[in-house]
Image (cartoon, rainbow, N blue to C red):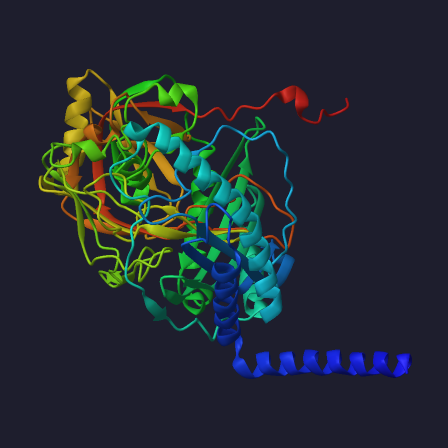
Length: 585
């Protein structure tokens, strides 16, 4: 009898297991994921109930699924080739209300050591596997979030003057959006063939001591389901060809440069017949620059940036430091030092809205929903951000030097911030798609533009007025490429002739970078970028690496910008010759 019951139980379990698999196969991947998110969301808001904090008022579950491929080759031989599935889950859970929740509050550090067991998301989009992963995350968050909410509530009861006069989170209407995923992608064998052929091309350059070429492709979908009713599926597809090469001179100095071509259309990149000529430009630059003179002493004076070489400077000027064009909210800290202060100034830039913020000639405009510009598709386009906000078509951040607004999320930084403008943007990392406050499509313009030839004349005239014998020009090594290394030229004040220099480091001579801009050209360019999550790190085969990681961003700006009062010095590429192999005599 006992044996009969055991057999019946096994048959029942097998039947249930097979039925579940068949149901998931008939549903399709998208339906399985959405059903798992919705069902776990329902369980979370109905079953998680803290005796004092109550139930969470807001829950959002995210799931990322997709595929990553990579082929790497050196001198015509493929050294690594793999494809692997991507799966990651994440969440946002809040106690309290939109007016006051458990976030933006730092409690005195807890001495209790807790090591939660993380349950990985299933790579085969299994319904129960997804729910189990989300349950694990929500369960751990429930305990810490409810405790933080009760502590925060008690804190403001004792310190009412420190409570911000605006809500902790902005409520908004639900958004339902399902965008089609990318299909018909190049195969791994195609990317193997591409890297094999491209890397073989370096054999023609005897001076190149080492090189490699890789093709990486990331194709994934981000799903969200939250308690407001927002439900979306957003696809992300980026492919990149990353090329690097190193040259060594007779003195043992090594110069390395890399070049990246990134596209939202993988098949176009696979069949791009301009890559070889761009590799030639990189190799020829290395051969020339290793023989070039160094900048002998520190330079202080004007620098002319051409092509996309000014992008890092402009991004630094607009979206970094205490004056960044982003609305940040300072956490309230439950510490004696914090409690003794007055109400905190949550954002240094916020208080300057409506005032002069930069030179009158400059304007900064966000166009987050713009799909393309001058025929170029924009990486930074945002249909809906990570929090389910559809951004407006246009946001004027700076108008003729006057600060008008900031990029924002649903966490307000002032009483005036009554809504998000959709800039809690997705960031692609090795472990999944997460988010951060960051720009999408940025237009930087000057009302006092002029032809680029006139800017070069201004450069030389400025250097001459300072008693300098030369000025500096920075050009992209490879034209018409978003991610190109920079080449540095010394321009003679006497005759305008240019001499290629070894790489130099250039910084502003103090003060705001934006105030160093002395002129802009009357033509603009588009720069798409990702921002690497792995910069300077070497990972073994199987890891997600390359230029497909980061936050997709697009900037439209003048193609030539003149900066004043910059400081430059040669990069030290010398080596300790005692460490080099010695010839036995």
